[in-house]
Length: 80
Image (cartoon, rainbow, N blue to C red; front, top):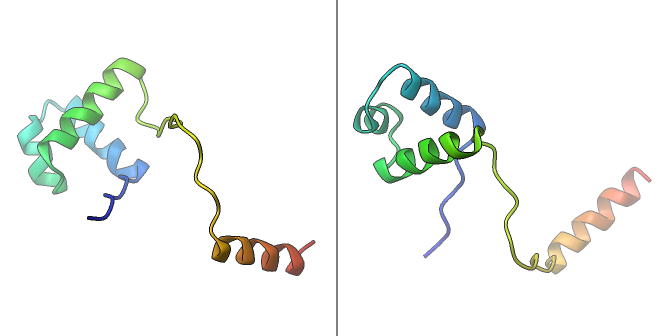
């Protein structure tokens, strides 16, 4: 099973805007076509941190794949 995609900043901003306009979590979920659990999690994060921006994740970063290394080399050669 693949990983889910992250919500773009604009959609998270809309979500908070609807929340500030006294829309319920269920209404926001229906309007933006996002699961209620996601809406609840974003609102909670906004209340605690005051931001909806993506925070750095803990843990060791993944190694770059061979294809990623080749693309990096090509872009460096094009514009040194």
